[in-house]
Each structure stands twice: as C-alpha cells, then as structure tokens.
Image 1: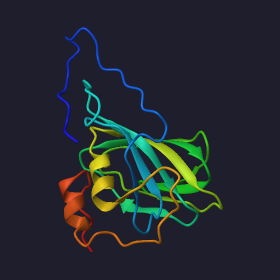
Image 2: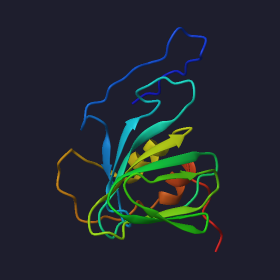
Image 3: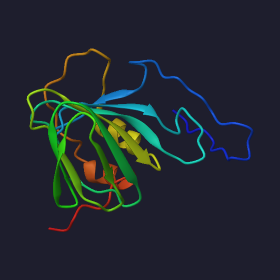
Image 4: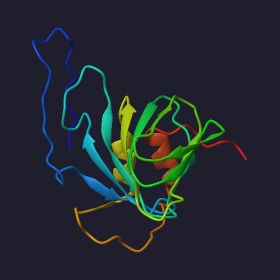
Length: 172
C-alpha cells in the first residue's frame, strides 16, 4: 500500500473512515508471540495531522512479546480480553479487560499471556510504523483461519527492527 499525504488543521476537515470487522490486513506472528496482529489504521489508509497507527494484537496462552523498546515512538494498549502480565520499565502489571498501558520512548516492555484463554488488546502507536514490522515478520492471515504451526522469526529480524520502529537491542 502507498502512504497517504498528511493534512493540516488549516484544511476544512480531516478524513473519516469505517473499517468493517475482518477487513484490515492481519498477520500471523512468529515465535515467541505465536498470535496475530491486525493493522486497522495507519498512514496507508488515512490522512492525519498527527501520524499514528492502530490495531489489535492477540496472543494465545503461553504466547509472549519479547522484551523490546521503541526509541522514537510511544505506545498505548487497551486490554479487551484475557489475562496476562506486562513488564514495563522494570515494573510488573496485570493485563486484564479494561486495563490501559502506556509505554513512552526507550521504555523496555514485554507482554506474556499467562492465562488459559487468548489475550487481546488494542494498540495505538505514535508516530506509526508498527504495522510495517508486523507485515515484515509475519505471514498473511485470513479472518477465522486456523493458526499455523509455530514458525521462526525471519533470519534478518534485527535488520527489520532497525528499519522499522525498534530501539537497538541492548548490548550483551
């Protein structure tokens, strides 16, 4: 998809868009997440004054998002269903329906589904770009499709991260 041009508040109005359920690009995610991410809004389908992207991510029981940070981005989660654990900036928080999490730039964070059902949240990412990462490391998913066998992250995942929205990994 191509990027749409940005707009300003000097224009008479902004865009409006309704995305039907199941119509947004969705990607299976590799281990250790083993879930899927849906990329609903981004500069690929809306023009906005302040760049952002938005979608959902779902982790099966035992799935986790590895520890990472974003050096030039901010992230907000709103938990829809399931139970899990978030480790943000060295502190542990429960993830349960209705919980909201904010991760500023360079704040390390990880998410673990330690429950027995899927854990799902809505994510907002400023200034956008997380959708490019999900597409680059994942596999296209159709709504309702059975989960594939767990698959490995791409061999060039560190380059993909560097080219998208991730801070460099910590030095060992």
